[in-house]
Every structure is written in structure tokens, then in C-alpha cells.
Image 1 (cartoon, helix red, strand yellow):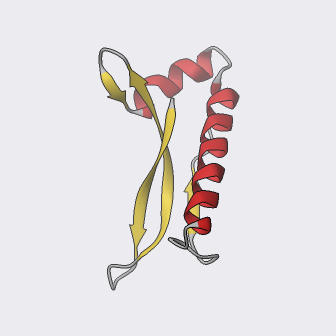
Image 2: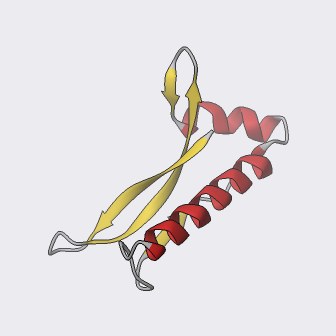
Length: 82
């Protein structure tokens, strides 16, 4: 499982934030969207572990982007919580 950013842009076309999305990088099927695996994760009590992966990956990415001066403190991230 891995997290991705979907950019959020303002009316001028500037990236002002992002939505964090989780994908399953399946070895045979490639990237699988959340709507395919979230219901199964909820059913088997694994949803919290998946949410932790997203939060962890996004925090690392935000820190790396800030350290590289790619984003600043005004950058916002939306995360869907199940």
C-alpha cells in the first residue's frame, strides 16, 4: 500500500494543497483504487492499519517537500478517514 497526492489548485492554477489517496500496488494487477479494497479492510478490521500507512507516508512526504522548499506552511492536505 502506498499514499499519493492528488493536487488541489486555486483559480489561478497554483497548487495550494492536496488530497491524500491510498492505493494498493498489486504485483499482478498494478495500482488498485481504494473503493476496491477499503470495504474488505473494514470488514476484517484492518482499516486503522491502512489509515496509519496513509498518515505516516503523508507526514514523511510533507516534511520532505517542506525541507526542499517545494511547499510552505500554507500548503494543506485533506485525508479521508473511514
